[in-house]
Length: 328
Length: 134
Image 1 (cartoon, chains in turn brown, red):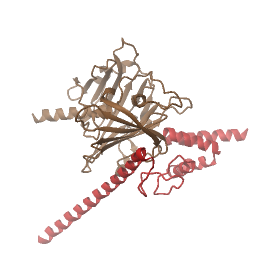
Image 2 (image 1 turned 180 degrees about the vertical axis):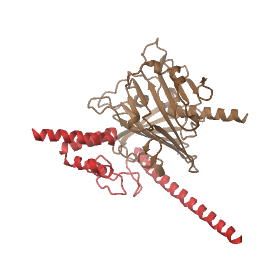
Image 3 (image 1 turned 135 degrees about the vertical axis):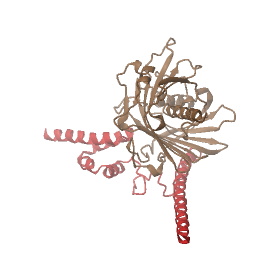
Image 4 (image 1 turned 120 degrees about the vertical axis):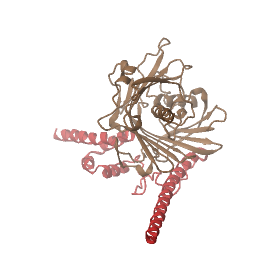
């Protein structure tokens, strides 16, 4: 019985971890064809929310991967309020290369593979469908059983991986869940957060952890206020700092009864350096989360050398077949 | 025997004190971060940015010291940062014409990829060298 409970807990844990690398979903009815707003015009709050969703889903790329390069991988570090630190290494491959038509059932597929800790050898394939009413499909490769199991979509307010993020924060939030309001435009004035005690230190899987990102200071951002439509929800509204040019959401502040309860910071880099390229061709460099109710911190660090995009890969890579090939 | 017990208590208290001071430090740094982001947020409603003094989370433009964060918006700050992070590449960077320096600066602002910047420094250095030979 105890063993069964442990297994169930582990399953919940890895489900959560994989989803963390999906995206900050705001609007679901957005696809790869979404154009940039006209230059010189201030977009509406709803339009900004759509653009943020577009950037977070890497819709500018046919496919986007956070690979494994030797021993270098993406690492997710969780630091609890008592100072205990846990880390998990993983790789992830997202495929947006599906035709956009009413006949096409699949919108995107996401494959994640874990390489450290108790989750080592575990893989997950997440399928998102074009039908908005249809839940995402979660298929998990369990290395101990050498079998694939299907899971239902988790709850929005479930915390994932013992981290500072919820499932809603990272992927499940839908457009109709919030109303959006533009509260202003200003320059970002502060550096993005990190787990301070680990800044710049040598760390397994990533070589050296980054220092706080201050590159975005003085960049112009929109203040986007998104109020939840859910009753008795864990937050009342959240404020996102969205780049006026690239639509990268650098920071999100969550409020409940007027008090700040949580912060999520995201450091972004631009893939397409050439002039005239899509400014939304972005990738995450790191994510940082601080939950003020629990004192918990989370930091997902993605080394640049593991980032790959528009790789020539068949869609068959994003199938159960790949899951079955994962070595422990 | 009694002495051993006393010694044990002494070390226990010492460890406790160390732990407490460690957590105090952590709370202080977390506090600084929160103060900075709250000041940043309040600017939306007040229109004025009133930052806490000497915050390690806030850039001081054109006046970067070891305690302050360079904004990178300024080419001088970027050069200082490069000198600190990669002194070897900085030697080549420093010899480049201003136009190349600002190009590298803009690239860094966009990508944040220092490794790529280092590669481009050498690329531009050889470009400049070829131009000079002509």
